[in-house]
Image (cartoon, rainbow, N blue to C red; front, side, top):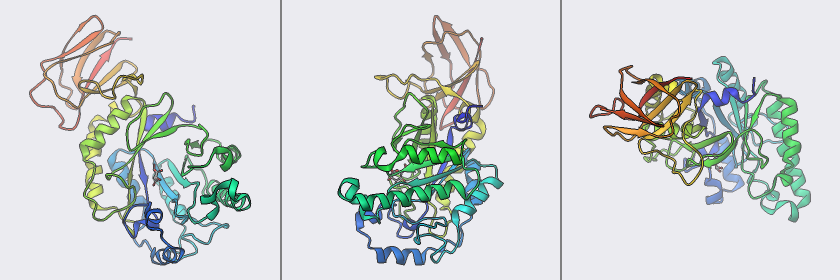
Length: 388
Ligand code: GLC
């Protein structure tokens, strides 16, 4: 089977941003903006004791939300490793926490049969060489690269089978500077079935350029967004949440263009998930429980060729062999769908099974006489059976 088949089938994943930044709660770029000192970092590490760190709770929530894989930030840009490392003392194992959080996470994923993804930031703001770059500080740079490669090797060696490696933070340096080819050859030797994203600068298995917005690509691609308005880590006072509708819409439009949607939550400093997050994710899951057939394992129904906008006059379209799914985000009493070459034999609401009136005129399929109100306030899916 194609290595990436499970990922294409999955369509919806959970991202977890968890680390020192969860404590100040001003987003995971706090250190950059606020010029956090090494002493302050150490103080945070001394305070980082996530008593409610139970990844199985995240996984249970991911399941309830209909998410099919999960990715955890094992080390973000601040350099704090949630795993044991021979090349760093700035880890959860060697500070107050005293636990290998990655180990616990991977074990929980395995136990629950959840494909396991590890996020790892190439850059580490604590290294001077990162800021100066390979030209200005060649000696420092090669030490930094050695450390980074060694950590990736640890992640790929110490935790059994890893399904996905999610790099980040390659900017502003080149794949040659990061020695990405060598790095990824090592990863693939240690984990032959792994999927790797494109953020070490080489194309690898899927494209992640679609960040905070939906921009379709002509290859396997993933759209990544936080559940919140901008930052990915926990912000206690943040009231700018995506609504269940927005999450469902984003997932639907991404799938309509052949992509996966990975949505991030930022657990609280103790490792637990804010009830506000859970509430929204469960509402998304309720929609997927009834309409998942129109998302999982589908292929795109809307053309990626510009200048067409992302959305059709009624919403999105996904496909499966012999089936066409119309995702009606914008309700109309009737509307046509163009470019339908196959003969449509039956049309119904996916949720209720109730038949929907239709007619075919040339290559246009007309959906007619819809009720005054949508069947589902978030997204009413109409499924069409097609011949051939
Ligand atoms: C960006 C940010 C980072 C976040 C990531 C997720 O690259 O630097 O904070 O983790 O996007 O896509």
